[in-house]
Image (cartoon, rainbow, N blue to C red; front, side, top):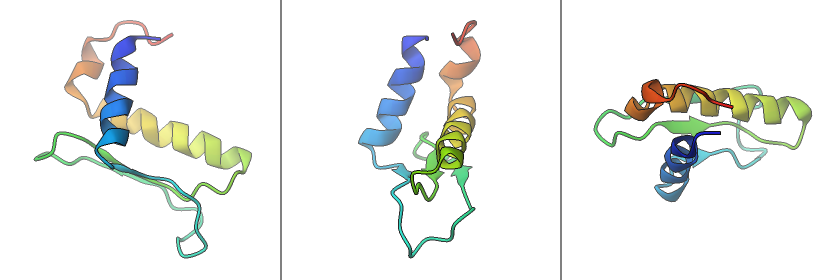
Length: 79
């Protein structure tokens, strides 16, 4: 995998732009990624409860986050 993908995800995590911790106070079944133009870092939201579908959802939303980064379009091979 291209190291730039790891760099993008690290930047999201280090800046607190990911909220996937499971909670009974969050609505189950809602996940999204929001482009934050001023910060130039996308925000990822999900309610991870440890189910297989939750893993798929977090990966899916992370994919949207990667697509919103300028570096992403320069990466020719993802795997």
